[in-house]
Image (cartoon, rainbow, N blue to C red; front, side, top):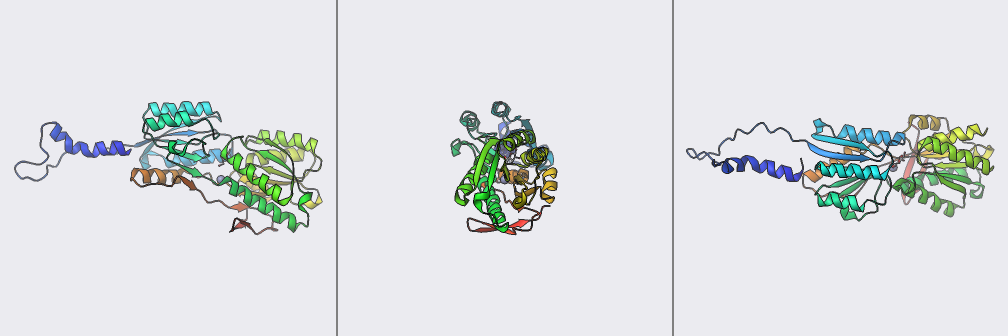
Length: 350
Ligand code: GZL
Ligand code: ZN
């Protein structure tokens, strides 16, 4: 129940008798009257959740985590809307939540720009907005807080892994020829994972032969990789911005008669990925067809609920809240990566 509703409902039992001309305490004994109000039917907190789509295994896990974290037994009623990766659908969903006077809005925005108007409407309606997973470029005053990943850190971990692996294989950075399959353009995950690769490639001296969006899907990941393999015969690394693109890329590599594998010094193509959610991708990583995965943790539900509970309790919450994430590989050459002064162990694929 929102703070507003809680206040009214807590005052009601006291005000009601007065309002009805009764008195708050029993005149004879002076003891406070035991108001026989109905057993307080726990008034559920309503939350509208605008999810951006269902494009990937990560997204499905994220949706599942949110839905199972906001059930009646936790005291919530959730309205879930799938935006099908269209911002206009998400904005329509937010407007319907505002119309229904939900207590909270959770928004996983497909891309960062274009939210100022509807976020202002939510603010004017007094409905706190919690951003989940990706961010918006709107003014920070238009949302209560955000929970998600440090996408550029995910990328730096994977790039440090690649740098160590190339050295372990006795190759030089100038031998590295990367095709870069980007995520949904303009999404926070794509922005961070692309910036991380661009900075690392420049610092290490890798070659990026081409980059194009695979929209975080297997189909487009396969199509873009197939097109690039026709154009560039010396590709030896495919950097995919999520598991589903990596699965598609490996299909394209094998369809082209090449090998996705660890022996980059013997003509294999090394595939790198993000998420570590899709079972298929974890299997491929166990086989070494995906060389390393930077984990992207989709299980935001319990953390979003904890944020709302803190807000309900009148506590202040951090504006930006990060989830912890690991790096996985089944290849033995690299046991840890060092990024901005922090050591991250490379964990075996689960
Ligand atoms: C990252 C998330 C990305 C995943 C993709 O937090 O926004 O979107 O990495 C998903 O799998 O489609
Ligand atoms: Zn992440």
